[in-house]
Amino acid sequence: MDSLTLSTAKIANGAIVCCECDLQGDITIGSRTVIHPRAKIIALSGPIIIGENNIIEEQVQIINRCETPMIIGNNNVFEVDCHVESKFIGDNNIVESKAFVGRQTSLSNGCVIGAKCEVLVAETLQESSLFYGAGSDVKRRVQSDKPSAQGAQIEFLSKVLPNYHRIRKPLA
Image 1 (cartoon, rainbow, N blue to C red):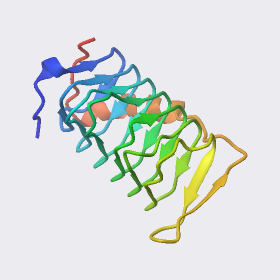
Image 2 (cartoon, rainbow, N blue to C red):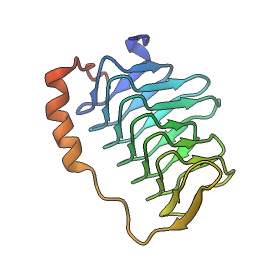
Image 3 (tube, one colour):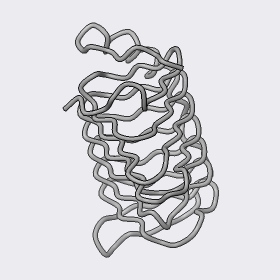
């Protein structure tokens, strides 16, 4: 499963990247980003640039099928088994379990894509957009609160994951 040649992933100091994740292509991972085992980050055509303080959980698939860079900002959470092909993701977003974000959809800041939601709209989502529901019954609204910060969870994972998994060495 360790299919990446280490020279193509640039891992910043302070990032926790489990060796059991699948990284392919030109990928840059920012400081204090946590990537769980069995996550897949695949840069098929263009690079993927991941900012700081992101959490990418088990079985998440982040795939760039376009030649332009996929940019993921800071303080985002990608929950278990979600699938993201969006070209741009701003800051402080949450993509919940089993959600799907298509490549024509861009997330601004503070957006939440609810569990099992499939978002395929060809637009940049308004700040603080919330998608909820499942199947053909997906609804959207603007939330008044921003998603909460994940600093404590990143701190916890940074201490616990190295006790149970091999961690890739920073190369940046």
